[in-house]
Length: 365
Image (cartoon, rainbow, N blue to C red):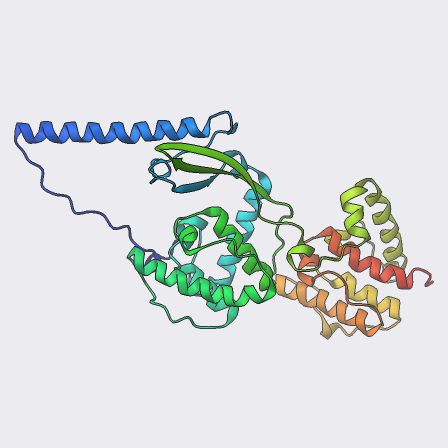
């Protein structure tokens, strides 16, 4: 995070003056070698646990991940999952979203686990999203202070999410411990709850390595952690429709549906000398959607009611939302899509909106 005043500086132990005598130097050298061997042995033990037959995939083990107390457990994302394009996209979308929300605070997040663990950014993010002010210290450097702040922030988050049935898959310790899986669960829940104008990649899962120390030995296992499902399910819309079935079980028929809808929209847009070849991109700014709705209802939409050449995300969302209002005025049901999803080039959402029009106006000359 580039906003220097918000970072909690790492506390460094005071260095004692070394004994300059020969025996002092020798003793210090032997002590360092012994400590280095202990750490090396623990790291080797950790690597052996991760690479054991029950854990086929290797993981990047850091020294702090192997220094466990008896029965203590540590989790980390398998490196192969971190390289997955959908996982990378999820992280990037969430980082960009946070930075957009906090642009006025001059906060820039670069790495989720390093920039969010102390509660400072999470506090600012929640205050901005919920329009509230949390009673916490602005800057906390001690671990106790950071966890107290996190506790306050997460209690406020839980108060918002719990009544809506969100699964709370994070704790103060997991967030402060820089557990990326827990942080991602938290951010996805916040983005969905506050209807963030972003499109999260669907069906993102990661392999998580769980290391636990029992009877002095490290044991590991792999579990699959689901970070996102479908947009509809995450938004609480559990009723599946024909397009869910189409995308999941008959993708080969998708081109037929798209061709039918393109023929339908061009039949009417051609009256304005307009033509569509790509459904998801050409309807994303809402202009064609507004014009098409007016043509189908046989009226002219005043140009001052929408942006004819939108140049920002908000203007595009305004256009699509306005088109939805025109559809409602025409007696159609509310589209099973968000304006933000259409603007974000979500094909399934765009098809739902157009099919909504097609079912009513397909016989219109």
